Amino acid sequence: MQDLPNLILIGPMGAGKSTIGRLLAAELSRQFLDSDHEIQARCGADIPWIFDVEGEAGFRQREVQMIEELTELEGVVIATGGGAVLREENRRRLRERGTVIYLFTTVEQQLKRVAKDRNRPLLQRPDREQVLREMFDLRDPLYRATADIVVRTDRRSPRAVVNEIVRRVQRLVDPLQAKA
Image (cartoon, rainbow, N blue to C red; front, side, top):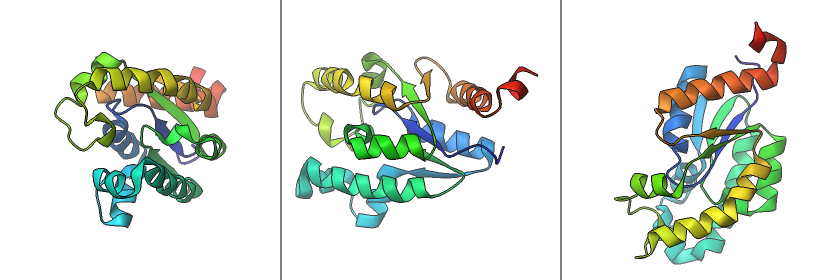
C-alpha cells in the first residue's frame, strides 16, 4: 500500500481525526502527523495560549505554514485542525498533495465528544452548541468541496471508520483491483 498518496483527514473538532489518523497510519505502516500538535511542538505552547497571544489570525497563519510543510512530505497520514479549510491556500494544497478524507460528524456527536475538553479556544463560551452549529454551517461546504471522500464517524468505532477509508482509498487508486 505504499503506492497510496498522502492521506489527509479534515473535519470538525470531535470528528476523530487524531484517533482515526493514528489507527490509519498504523494500519498502513505510515507516519502520522497532526498539524495542531506540530504547531504546538514548534511553538512550545498550546493552542489556547497561541490564540490568547496571537489571536485566531496569528494561529491560522501558523497553520498555513505547517500545512505547507506537512503536505510536502510523502507517504504520510495527516490530521488537520478543524479550521484548516477556512483558508483557500490550505484547501488548494490539501487537494493537490494527497487524498482528502472528510470525517463527517453531527453537532450532537461533537458536543458529546468535546464536552470536557478545555483545550479548544473557540468553545470556551457558554453557548457551545450554537458555536458548533455556526461553524458547521460555514465549514461543511468547505470540507465537502475539498474532500475526495466523505466518511461518517457517528456511532461507529474508529476501527470501522479506518477499514472504510482503506477500502475507499484503494478504489480511488486502483478501481479494478478493488473489485477483485
